[in-house]
Length: 442
Image (cartoon, rainbow, N blue to C red; front, side):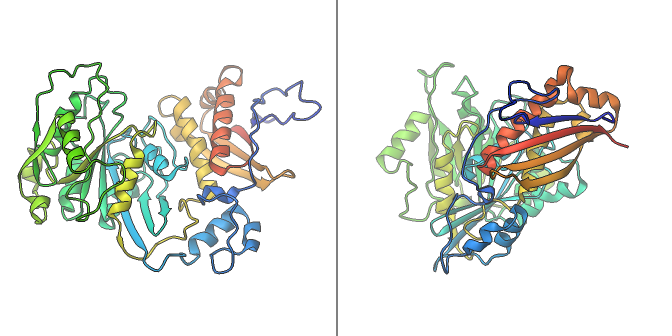
């Protein structure tokens, strides 16, 4: 009534009367899992902390927002000799920054979309492994709607111990040069170690192009050593050869990153990739910090000659992400943790919900339409069977936008509700009942 269309997922007609779904209601399967709304903020599901181990059992009865607030305010339960690494991730839109963050975290808590401006909140992801904690921002792109977010990459760089520069090698327009904004960031903070991450290598059919791309983006220098491209006449466009560039001098002396070749195996890997590090080129290899580049120098630069390492991976499929994660854990330095070990993200469950629904809006609505949609949550509560009940209104400025959001026969809003509901269950690890209402702003 009143021009409002409701879309629910899974069907509200569950039970004996399920055979006749209501108009405007999308049917979807239910996934049952342990009652663990706190799982979205904790990588350990269903574990009750004992005495002296952080959270008391009574705290598990708090609402999701209260649980998250208490976890964020709780003193970190760090070991006697904690290690920490603060990571900044920068790159062009659609390079896969949020996807990489989700893969490193092991759970989808940051929205992913082909359109820009997907990640609006200034959230951080937290990875805790044994005595080491990695802290990374959710997404640091170049184009954001809010003016305040234009400074996010710079702010994250100020507090970073290491920066990952992510490049989409499937984009032939941008893959052979770093953007001026990225180069300015790197030049402004030359003392911060940086690593080049080539993403979406699985999409690139001509694998031999990775040699050219790596050379261009590094100015032919990695970790203070010149890269030499050896002839590889047997490689062709159908080759599925991987080009592993593993940690060398960037790792502490005598250390070894699990899964990376060393000694003779390392030499064989470099020969197989067609890349070789030869004579010293200064910088990191000599122990001297990289020089500061002025604006005039940046104008003529395509790449950054001070990267310590290169990683080639496919974030969407999770290929080689573990190798990068092991490297990051090795780079951590002694220092106090910022978060409790149970924290997975600084976002609240409601923020994650809004972002997941917004991701679907960006995916299925054309042009500027998704950017004009406002989200208002009316209900956020636990049902009788432990499921999470969510009712949210999607407010649009025009009647025409409402028709586009609903779609013919309700297909668009139905698909949004189904996919968002499934993603919410995967994030929260509990059954979710999502109801979306489409209204024109008054």
